[in-house]
Image (cartoon, rainbow over all chains, first blue to last red; front, side, top):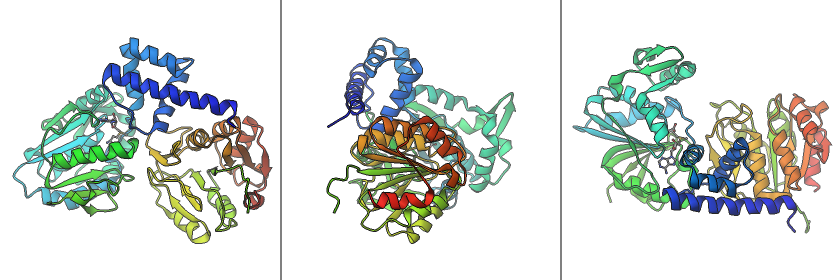
Length: 280
Length: 189
Ligand SMILES: C[S@@+](CC[C@H](N)C(=O)[O-])C[C@H]1O[C@@H](n2cnc3c(N)ncnc32)[C@H](O)[C@@H]1O
Protein backbone atom coordinates (compact mmCIF):
# COMPACT_ATOMS: atom_id res chain seq x y z
CA UNK A 1 0.00 0.00 0.00
CA UNK A 2 1.37 3.37 -0.99
CA UNK A 3 1.01 6.25 1.44
CA UNK A 4 -0.11 9.73 0.49
CA UNK A 5 3.39 11.09 0.00
CA UNK A 6 4.33 8.17 -2.22
CA UNK A 7 1.24 8.71 -4.35
CA UNK A 8 2.05 12.41 -4.81
CA UNK A 9 5.59 11.48 -5.76
CA UNK A 10 4.30 9.02 -8.33
CA UNK A 11 2.20 11.81 -9.85
CA UNK A 12 5.19 14.15 -9.92
CA UNK A 13 7.09 11.54 -11.93
CA UNK A 14 4.24 11.35 -14.43
CA UNK A 15 4.13 15.14 -14.71
CA UNK A 16 7.88 15.23 -15.34
CA UNK A 17 7.57 12.72 -18.19
CA UNK A 18 4.89 14.88 -19.78
CA UNK A 19 6.95 18.02 -19.20
CA UNK A 20 9.95 16.54 -21.01
CA UNK A 21 7.72 15.43 -23.88
CA UNK A 22 6.37 18.98 -24.19
CA UNK A 23 9.89 20.46 -24.24
CA UNK A 24 10.89 18.03 -26.97
CA UNK A 25 7.83 18.76 -29.11
CA UNK A 26 8.06 22.50 -28.69
CA UNK A 27 11.79 23.23 -28.64
CA UNK A 28 13.48 20.07 -29.94
CA UNK A 29 15.58 19.42 -26.83
CA UNK A 30 15.40 15.79 -25.79
CA UNK A 31 16.00 15.08 -22.10
CA UNK A 32 14.27 11.72 -21.98
CA UNK A 33 17.51 9.79 -21.67
CA UNK A 34 19.00 11.90 -18.91
CA UNK A 35 19.17 10.65 -15.33
CA UNK A 36 15.57 11.11 -14.20
CA UNK A 37 16.51 11.84 -10.62
CA UNK A 38 18.86 14.58 -11.71
CA UNK A 39 16.13 16.17 -13.86
CA UNK A 40 13.63 15.83 -11.03
CA UNK A 41 15.90 17.58 -8.53
CA UNK A 42 16.49 20.46 -10.91
CA UNK A 43 12.81 20.88 -11.84
CA UNK A 44 11.63 20.73 -8.24
CA UNK A 45 14.27 23.29 -7.35
CA UNK A 46 12.91 25.61 -10.04
CA UNK A 47 9.37 24.93 -8.82
CA UNK A 48 10.28 26.08 -5.32
CA UNK A 49 12.22 29.19 -6.41
CA UNK A 50 9.43 30.34 -8.74
CA UNK A 51 6.75 29.51 -6.22
CA UNK A 52 4.80 27.50 -8.77
CA UNK A 53 2.31 24.86 -7.64
CA UNK A 54 3.07 21.99 -9.92
CA UNK A 55 5.25 20.69 -12.73
CA UNK A 56 2.16 20.78 -14.96
CA UNK A 57 1.88 24.50 -14.32
CA UNK A 58 5.56 24.87 -15.17
CA UNK A 59 4.94 22.98 -18.38
CA UNK A 60 2.36 25.59 -19.37
CA UNK A 61 4.84 28.37 -18.55
CA UNK A 62 7.62 26.71 -20.54
CA UNK A 63 5.37 26.30 -23.58
CA UNK A 64 4.13 29.89 -23.63
CA UNK A 65 7.17 31.76 -22.33
CA UNK A 66 10.40 31.20 -24.21
CA UNK A 67 12.42 32.99 -21.56
CA UNK A 68 11.13 30.64 -18.93
CA UNK A 69 12.16 27.74 -21.13
CA UNK A 70 15.70 29.21 -21.35
CA UNK A 71 15.79 29.20 -17.57
CA UNK A 72 14.77 25.54 -17.53
CA UNK A 73 17.43 24.71 -20.10
CA UNK A 74 20.03 26.38 -17.89
CA UNK A 75 18.70 24.42 -14.89
CA UNK A 76 19.00 21.11 -16.68
CA UNK A 77 22.50 21.75 -17.98
CA UNK A 78 24.76 21.66 -14.97
CA UNK A 79 27.49 24.15 -15.77
CA UNK A 80 29.77 23.67 -12.79
CA UNK A 81 33.34 23.65 -14.06
CA UNK A 82 36.83 24.92 -13.26
CA UNK A 83 40.24 25.46 -14.84
CA UNK A 84 42.55 22.46 -14.85
CA UNK A 85 39.80 20.51 -13.08
CA UNK A 86 41.41 17.29 -11.85
CA UNK A 87 44.98 18.47 -12.43
CA UNK A 88 46.28 14.93 -12.86
CA UNK A 89 44.13 14.54 -15.93
CA UNK A 90 45.88 17.51 -17.54
CA UNK A 91 49.22 16.20 -16.38
CA UNK A 92 48.52 12.92 -18.17
CA UNK A 93 47.47 14.79 -21.30
CA UNK A 94 50.62 16.90 -21.15
CA UNK A 95 53.05 14.09 -20.46
CA UNK A 96 51.53 11.16 -22.32
CA UNK A 97 49.12 12.35 -25.01
CA UNK A 98 50.84 15.52 -26.24
CA UNK A 99 54.11 13.77 -27.21
CA UNK A 100 52.08 11.61 -29.59
CA UNK A 101 50.00 14.53 -30.88
CA UNK A 102 53.22 16.43 -31.61
CA UNK A 103 54.00 13.98 -34.39
CA UNK A 104 51.02 15.16 -36.50
CA UNK A 105 51.41 18.06 -38.95
CA UNK A 106 48.19 19.67 -37.71
CA UNK A 107 45.67 18.84 -35.02
CA UNK A 108 41.99 19.07 -34.22
CA UNK A 109 40.63 18.94 -30.69
CA UNK A 110 36.98 18.83 -29.69
CA UNK A 111 35.74 19.87 -26.24
CA UNK A 112 32.19 18.49 -26.04
CA UNK A 113 30.05 19.99 -23.26
CA UNK A 114 32.61 22.73 -22.62
CA UNK A 115 30.29 24.78 -20.40
CA UNK A 116 31.70 28.28 -19.68
CA UNK A 117 35.04 27.39 -21.24
CA UNK A 118 37.44 27.05 -18.30
CA UNK A 119 38.46 23.65 -19.59
CA UNK A 120 39.11 24.99 -23.09
CA UNK A 121 41.33 27.84 -21.92
CA UNK A 122 43.22 25.34 -19.78
CA UNK A 123 43.87 23.24 -22.86
CA UNK A 124 44.90 26.30 -24.89
CA UNK A 125 47.47 27.21 -22.24
CA UNK A 126 48.80 23.68 -22.21
CA UNK A 127 49.10 23.58 -26.00
CA UNK A 128 50.94 26.92 -26.03
CA UNK A 129 53.41 25.70 -23.47
CA UNK A 130 54.00 22.54 -25.44
CA UNK A 131 54.53 24.57 -28.60
CA UNK A 132 51.70 23.08 -30.67
CA UNK A 133 48.95 25.64 -30.28
CA UNK A 134 49.59 27.19 -33.70
CA UNK A 135 48.94 23.97 -35.57
CA UNK A 136 45.78 23.17 -33.62
CA UNK A 137 42.13 23.86 -34.34
CA UNK A 138 39.92 23.64 -31.24
CA UNK A 139 36.16 23.13 -31.37
CA UNK A 140 34.42 24.01 -28.13
CA UNK A 141 30.78 22.98 -28.12
CA UNK A 142 27.83 22.97 -25.76
CA UNK A 143 24.05 22.93 -26.22
CA UNK A 144 23.55 25.88 -23.91
CA UNK A 145 24.09 29.15 -25.75
CA UNK A 146 24.33 31.17 -22.55
CA UNK A 147 27.42 29.34 -21.38
CA UNK A 148 28.95 29.43 -24.87
CA UNK A 149 28.71 33.20 -24.85
CA UNK A 150 30.55 33.30 -21.53
CA UNK A 151 33.12 30.90 -22.86
CA UNK A 152 33.88 33.03 -25.89
CA UNK A 153 34.18 36.14 -23.70
CA UNK A 154 36.87 34.42 -21.65
CA UNK A 155 36.12 36.47 -18.56
CA UNK A 156 36.07 34.66 -15.25
CA UNK A 157 35.59 35.58 -11.62
CA UNK A 158 38.74 36.57 -9.75
CA UNK A 159 37.64 34.64 -6.65
CA UNK A 160 38.69 31.36 -8.11
CA UNK A 161 42.07 32.34 -9.52
CA UNK A 162 43.96 31.15 -6.48
CA UNK A 163 42.44 27.71 -6.78
CA UNK A 164 43.10 27.65 -10.54
CA UNK A 165 46.72 28.66 -10.02
CA UNK A 166 47.20 25.71 -7.71
CA UNK A 167 45.50 23.40 -10.20
CA UNK A 168 47.70 24.76 -12.99
CA UNK A 169 50.83 24.06 -11.02
CA UNK A 170 49.70 20.57 -10.05
CA UNK A 171 48.96 19.84 -13.69
CA UNK A 172 52.58 20.44 -14.61
CA UNK A 173 52.23 24.08 -15.73
CA UNK A 174 55.55 25.48 -16.86
CA UNK A 175 55.19 29.23 -16.66
CA UNK A 176 53.58 31.73 -14.38
CA UNK A 177 49.80 31.36 -14.52
CA UNK A 178 49.25 35.09 -14.09
CA UNK A 179 50.93 35.72 -17.46
CA UNK A 180 47.81 34.42 -19.17
CA UNK A 181 45.26 36.88 -17.83
CA UNK A 182 44.70 40.51 -16.90
CA UNK A 183 42.80 41.31 -13.71
CA UNK A 184 40.12 43.96 -13.87
CA UNK A 185 37.80 44.75 -10.95
CA UNK A 186 36.43 41.38 -9.83
CA UNK A 187 37.23 39.59 -13.04
CA UNK A 188 40.12 38.28 -15.01
CA UNK A 189 40.24 38.39 -18.78
CA UNK A 190 42.19 35.67 -20.47
CA UNK A 191 44.66 36.60 -23.18
CA UNK A 192 43.02 36.98 -26.59
CA UNK A 193 45.74 34.95 -28.26
CA UNK A 194 44.48 31.90 -26.37
CA UNK A 195 41.24 31.87 -28.32
CA UNK A 196 42.61 32.58 -31.80
CA UNK A 197 42.26 28.94 -32.79
CA UNK A 198 39.08 28.18 -30.87
CA UNK A 199 35.66 27.97 -32.51
CA UNK A 200 32.75 28.09 -30.05
CA UNK A 201 29.65 26.39 -31.42
CA UNK A 202 26.21 25.21 -30.44
CA UNK A 203 26.13 21.41 -30.69
CA UNK A 204 23.70 19.02 -29.03
CA UNK A 205 25.22 15.62 -28.30
CA UNK A 206 21.77 14.04 -28.28
CA UNK A 207 20.60 15.15 -31.70
CA UNK A 208 23.48 16.61 -33.75
CA UNK A 209 25.89 14.55 -35.76
CA UNK A 210 29.63 14.38 -36.25
CA UNK A 211 31.14 17.51 -37.82
CA UNK A 212 34.87 16.78 -38.04
CA UNK A 213 37.54 14.14 -37.69
CA UNK A 214 39.61 15.02 -34.68
CA UNK A 215 42.73 13.82 -32.87
CA UNK A 216 41.43 14.33 -29.36
CA UNK A 217 37.98 14.60 -27.81
CA UNK A 218 37.56 15.88 -24.27
CA UNK A 219 34.13 15.25 -22.83
CA UNK A 220 34.26 15.41 -19.07
CA UNK A 221 31.42 15.28 -16.57
CA UNK A 222 28.75 15.23 -19.22
CA UNK A 223 28.10 11.51 -19.70
CA UNK A 224 27.31 11.02 -16.00
CA UNK A 225 24.01 12.83 -16.59
CA UNK A 226 22.98 10.42 -19.37
CA UNK A 227 21.47 6.96 -19.09
CA UNK A 228 23.27 3.98 -20.62
CA UNK A 229 21.33 4.18 -23.87
CA UNK A 230 22.34 7.77 -24.47
CA UNK A 231 25.89 7.17 -23.26
CA UNK A 232 26.21 4.46 -25.90
CA UNK A 233 24.90 6.73 -28.58
CA UNK A 234 27.31 9.52 -27.69
CA UNK A 235 30.31 7.22 -27.47
CA UNK A 236 29.39 6.00 -30.92
CA UNK A 237 29.36 9.62 -32.10
CA UNK A 238 32.80 10.11 -30.57
CA UNK A 239 34.16 7.03 -32.26
CA UNK A 240 32.91 8.33 -35.60
CA UNK A 241 34.52 11.69 -34.95
CA UNK A 242 37.98 10.38 -34.01
CA UNK A 243 40.77 9.50 -36.39
CA UNK A 244 42.28 6.07 -35.87
CA UNK A 245 44.72 6.48 -33.01
CA UNK A 246 42.76 9.48 -31.72
CA UNK A 247 42.20 10.01 -27.99
CA UNK A 248 39.07 10.30 -25.87
CA UNK A 249 39.35 11.88 -22.41
CA UNK A 250 36.45 11.43 -19.98
CA UNK A 251 35.72 12.57 -16.42
CA UNK A 252 37.20 10.74 -13.44
CA UNK A 253 33.98 8.87 -12.78
CA UNK A 254 33.10 8.04 -16.38
CA UNK A 255 33.64 4.79 -18.23
CA UNK A 256 33.19 3.30 -21.70
CA UNK A 257 33.57 -0.29 -20.54
CA UNK A 258 29.80 -0.80 -20.86
CA UNK A 259 29.52 0.63 -24.34
CA UNK A 260 29.14 -1.61 -27.36
CA UNK A 261 31.92 0.41 -28.98
CA UNK A 262 34.36 -0.43 -26.21
CA UNK A 263 36.14 -3.04 -28.31
CA UNK A 264 37.15 -0.30 -30.73
CA UNK A 265 39.08 1.50 -28.01
CA UNK A 266 42.14 0.64 -25.98
CA UNK A 267 42.67 1.97 -22.47
CA UNK A 268 45.50 4.49 -22.64
CA UNK A 269 45.46 5.75 -19.06
CA UNK A 270 43.04 3.86 -16.81
CA UNK A 271 43.12 6.17 -13.81
CA UNK A 272 42.72 9.38 -15.83
CA UNK A 273 40.09 7.79 -18.11
CA UNK A 274 41.91 8.35 -21.38
CA UNK A 275 41.06 5.95 -24.19
CA UNK A 276 42.41 5.52 -27.70
CA UNK A 277 40.58 4.53 -30.85
CA UNK A 278 42.23 1.51 -32.41
CA UNK A 279 42.21 0.16 -35.94
CA UNK A 280 39.43 -2.26 -36.66
CA UNK B 1 14.94 -15.87 8.48
CA UNK B 2 13.21 -12.57 8.67
CA UNK B 3 10.37 -12.87 6.23
CA UNK B 4 8.64 -9.58 6.69
CA UNK B 5 11.40 -7.04 6.96
CA UNK B 6 9.68 -3.97 5.61
CA UNK B 7 12.93 -2.18 4.79
CA UNK B 8 14.91 -2.30 1.56
CA UNK B 9 17.83 0.07 2.09
CA UNK B 10 19.73 2.20 4.61
CA UNK B 11 21.19 5.65 4.03
CA UNK B 12 23.70 7.18 6.43
CA UNK B 13 25.01 10.75 6.59
CA UNK B 14 28.07 11.73 8.57
CA UNK B 15 30.59 14.52 8.75
CA UNK B 16 33.35 15.42 11.20
CA UNK B 17 34.15 12.43 13.39
CA UNK B 18 32.27 10.25 10.93
CA UNK B 19 35.05 7.84 10.16
CA UNK B 20 35.14 6.51 13.70
CA UNK B 21 31.35 6.42 14.02
CA UNK B 22 30.96 4.57 10.73
CA UNK B 23 33.58 2.05 11.76
CA UNK B 24 31.66 1.33 14.96
CA UNK B 25 28.46 0.67 13.03
CA UNK B 26 29.73 -1.15 9.96
CA UNK B 27 32.19 -3.45 11.70
CA UNK B 28 29.47 -5.18 13.73
CA UNK B 29 27.23 -5.99 10.75
CA UNK B 30 27.31 -9.64 9.63
CA UNK B 31 28.10 -10.81 6.10
CA UNK B 32 24.48 -11.92 5.79
CA UNK B 33 23.17 -8.42 6.48
CA UNK B 34 20.12 -8.02 4.27
CA UNK B 35 20.07 -4.34 3.34
CA UNK B 36 22.32 -2.35 1.05
CA UNK B 37 23.86 0.71 2.74
CA UNK B 38 24.54 4.07 1.08
CA UNK B 39 26.78 6.55 2.83
CA UNK B 40 27.56 10.19 2.34
CA UNK B 41 30.50 11.21 4.46
CA UNK B 42 31.75 14.78 4.02
CA UNK B 43 35.29 14.70 2.69
CA UNK B 44 37.56 17.21 1.00
CA UNK B 45 37.24 17.29 -2.81
CA UNK B 46 40.75 16.01 -3.34
CA UNK B 47 40.73 13.12 -0.89
CA UNK B 48 41.57 9.63 -2.13
CA UNK B 49 39.76 6.36 -1.47
CA UNK B 50 41.44 5.73 1.87
CA UNK B 51 38.19 5.54 3.86
CA UNK B 52 36.59 2.88 1.70
CA UNK B 53 39.75 0.80 1.58
CA UNK B 54 40.21 1.02 5.32
CA UNK B 55 36.59 0.09 6.10
CA UNK B 56 36.55 -2.64 3.49
CA UNK B 57 39.41 -4.38 5.28
CA UNK B 58 37.66 -4.05 8.60
CA UNK B 59 34.13 -5.10 7.65
CA UNK B 60 32.48 -8.30 6.60
CA UNK B 61 30.37 -6.44 4.05
CA UNK B 62 31.99 -5.16 0.85
CA UNK B 63 32.69 -1.43 1.17
CA UNK B 64 33.26 0.52 -2.03
CA UNK B 65 33.07 3.91 -3.68
CA UNK B 66 29.90 4.21 -5.78
CA UNK B 67 30.25 3.97 -9.57
CA UNK B 68 27.85 5.83 -11.80
CA UNK B 69 24.89 3.69 -13.02
CA UNK B 70 25.87 0.94 -10.59
CA UNK B 71 23.03 -1.36 -9.56
CA UNK B 72 22.44 -1.29 -5.79
CA UNK B 73 23.04 -4.73 -4.31
CA UNK B 74 22.51 -6.40 -0.97
CA UNK B 75 25.72 -7.07 0.94
CA UNK B 76 27.39 -3.89 -0.22
CA UNK B 77 28.16 -0.53 1.31
CA UNK B 78 28.47 2.36 -1.14
CA UNK B 79 30.21 5.67 -0.43
CA UNK B 80 29.64 8.90 -2.34
CA UNK B 81 32.93 9.69 -4.14
CA UNK B 82 34.77 12.88 -3.09
CA UNK B 83 33.45 15.93 -4.95
CA UNK B 84 30.35 14.16 -6.35
CA UNK B 85 26.79 14.05 -5.08
CA UNK B 86 25.40 10.54 -4.85
CA UNK B 87 21.84 10.17 -6.17
CA UNK B 88 19.53 7.17 -6.14
CA UNK B 89 17.44 6.45 -9.24
CA UNK B 90 13.97 4.90 -9.12
CA UNK B 91 15.32 1.78 -10.83
CA UNK B 92 17.69 1.34 -7.84
CA UNK B 93 20.81 2.35 -9.68
CA UNK B 94 23.22 5.05 -8.56
CA UNK B 95 23.93 8.36 -10.26
CA UNK B 96 26.69 10.86 -9.62
CA UNK B 97 26.54 14.59 -10.13
CA UNK B 98 28.93 17.53 -10.02
CA UNK B 99 26.00 19.88 -9.47
CA UNK B 100 26.63 22.87 -7.14
CA UNK B 101 27.31 22.29 -3.49
CA UNK B 102 24.29 21.87 -1.23
CA UNK B 103 24.68 23.11 2.37
CA UNK B 104 28.28 23.95 1.38
CA UNK B 105 28.88 20.27 0.75
CA UNK B 106 29.54 18.02 -2.20
CA UNK B 107 28.75 15.24 -1.62
CA UNK B 108 25.69 16.43 0.28
CA UNK B 109 23.69 14.25 2.64
CA UNK B 110 20.42 16.04 1.80
CA UNK B 111 20.81 15.18 -1.89
CA UNK B 112 21.32 11.49 -1.21
CA UNK B 113 18.56 11.29 1.43
CA UNK B 114 15.95 13.03 -0.69
CA UNK B 115 16.60 11.01 -3.84
CA UNK B 116 16.75 7.76 -1.82
CA UNK B 117 13.35 8.64 -0.32
CA UNK B 118 11.96 9.04 -3.85
CA UNK B 119 13.33 5.65 -4.82
CA UNK B 120 12.53 3.66 -1.67
CA UNK B 121 9.58 5.49 -0.12
CA UNK B 122 8.56 4.03 3.23
CA UNK B 123 11.03 1.14 2.95
CA UNK B 124 14.03 3.35 3.67
CA UNK B 125 15.99 3.79 6.89
CA UNK B 126 17.81 7.12 7.34
CA UNK B 127 20.54 7.69 9.91
CA UNK B 128 22.26 10.95 10.87
CA UNK B 129 25.58 10.69 12.65
CA UNK B 130 28.16 13.09 14.05
CA UNK B 131 28.91 16.38 12.28
CA UNK B 132 29.48 20.08 12.80
CA UNK B 133 26.91 21.39 10.31
CA UNK B 134 23.24 20.90 9.44
CA UNK B 135 23.42 18.91 6.22
CA UNK B 136 21.01 15.96 6.26
CA UNK B 137 18.32 17.34 8.55
CA UNK B 138 16.12 18.34 5.64
CA UNK B 139 16.71 14.99 3.95
CA UNK B 140 15.88 13.07 7.12
CA UNK B 141 12.62 14.95 7.36
CA UNK B 142 11.76 13.92 3.82
CA UNK B 143 12.49 10.27 4.67
CA UNK B 144 10.13 10.57 7.62
CA UNK B 145 7.43 12.20 5.45
CA UNK B 146 7.65 9.25 3.08
CA UNK B 147 7.04 6.91 6.01
CA UNK B 148 10.62 5.68 6.35
CA UNK B 149 12.40 4.95 9.64
CA UNK B 150 14.57 7.76 11.00
CA UNK B 151 17.45 7.47 13.44
CA UNK B 152 19.80 10.05 14.92
CA UNK B 153 22.96 9.34 16.82
CA UNK B 154 22.58 10.45 20.42
CA UNK B 155 24.38 13.84 20.35
CA UNK B 156 25.94 13.04 23.72
CA UNK B 157 27.88 10.24 22.06
CA UNK B 158 28.86 12.28 18.99
CA UNK B 159 32.28 13.71 18.26
CA UNK B 160 30.41 16.77 16.89
CA UNK B 161 26.83 16.94 18.19
CA UNK B 162 25.51 19.70 15.89
CA UNK B 163 24.36 17.54 13.00
CA UNK B 164 22.28 15.06 15.02
CA UNK B 165 20.96 17.97 17.12
CA UNK B 166 19.73 19.77 14.02
CA UNK B 167 18.17 16.56 12.72
CA UNK B 168 16.38 15.95 16.01
CA UNK B 169 15.11 19.53 16.05
CA UNK B 170 13.78 19.30 12.49
CA UNK B 171 12.14 15.88 12.67
CA UNK B 172 10.47 13.77 15.29
CA UNK B 173 12.98 10.98 14.73
CA UNK B 174 11.97 7.42 15.55
CA UNK B 175 15.09 6.53 17.51
CA UNK B 176 17.91 8.38 19.19
CA UNK B 177 20.65 5.85 19.80
CA UNK B 178 24.13 5.95 21.29
CA UNK B 179 26.79 5.19 18.71
CA UNK B 180 27.60 1.79 20.19
CA UNK B 181 24.01 0.63 19.80
CA UNK B 182 23.28 1.55 16.19
CA UNK B 183 25.00 -1.43 14.54
CA UNK B 184 23.33 -3.81 16.94
CA UNK B 185 19.94 -2.19 16.34
CA UNK B 186 20.30 -2.60 12.57
CA UNK B 187 21.37 -6.25 12.89
CA UNK B 188 18.26 -7.03 14.88
CA UNK B 189 15.75 -5.38 12.56
C1 LIG C 1 29.14 19.67 -15.58
S1 LIG C 1 29.43 20.53 -17.09
C2 LIG C 1 31.04 19.95 -17.51
C3 LIG C 1 31.96 21.05 -17.96
C4 LIG C 1 33.37 20.63 -18.25
N1 LIG C 1 33.43 19.65 -19.32
C5 LIG C 1 34.06 20.11 -17.02
O1 LIG C 1 34.24 18.90 -16.87
O2 LIG C 1 34.42 20.91 -16.16
C6 LIG C 1 28.32 19.72 -18.23
C7 LIG C 1 28.09 20.48 -19.52
O3 LIG C 1 27.48 19.62 -20.48
C8 LIG C 1 26.55 20.33 -21.23
N2 LIG C 1 25.57 19.42 -21.83
C9 LIG C 1 24.63 18.69 -21.20
N3 LIG C 1 23.90 18.01 -22.10
C10 LIG C 1 24.41 18.31 -23.33
C11 LIG C 1 24.07 17.92 -24.65
N4 LIG C 1 23.06 17.09 -24.89
N5 LIG C 1 24.81 18.40 -25.67
C12 LIG C 1 25.85 19.25 -25.43
N6 LIG C 1 26.21 19.66 -24.20
C13 LIG C 1 25.50 19.20 -23.16
C14 LIG C 1 25.95 21.29 -20.22
O4 LIG C 1 25.34 22.41 -20.85
C15 LIG C 1 27.14 21.65 -19.35
O5 LIG C 1 27.75 22.84 -19.78
